[in-house]
Image (cartoon, rainbow, N blue to C red; front, side, top):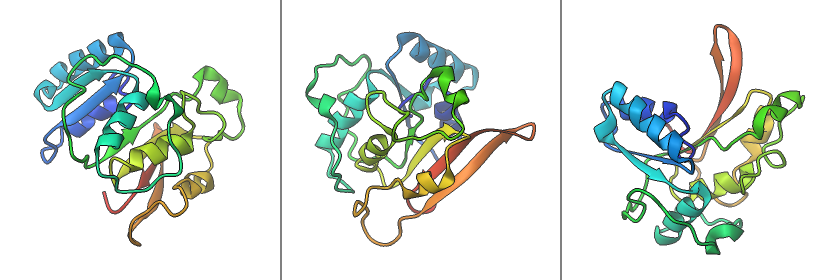
Length: 193
């Protein structure tokens, strides 16, 4: 969970019996503390690894040390920057079953847009296409949470051309609603989840 926030996704994943370990990453120490408290409340603290770090730098570090499932034409220009990691950021995972990304949407300004564009409106420091390409270097299964006004067609067209291995690559877009009101979209990239 690359942008864990209060830990909703990390905790939901960790609560699944078949999930052994979840890695929860956020740049904000208070969000990591909040996630840790919430994980304790839900009884999954022991299943979550907490790392305070810039997700773009940490994922790039892991992707550079992991045999790539996908070749990407996109690379993070920030990967040469220095960054300190708090938590066990140096552990050597050889692969991830799934990477969840929900990059910051740009504050409340995104609500004013009739149509949210993940390539131009996500800049933290990567755009939506670059986040997806980076995540696909770590796993063949990626979920991406975006505002409800994001066009499903744009999400379906996001996987970098020629970046997939084999012909089993699929994209599914789901609307998430609470009390019959759409709150966000989730795009699932890869084979069956």
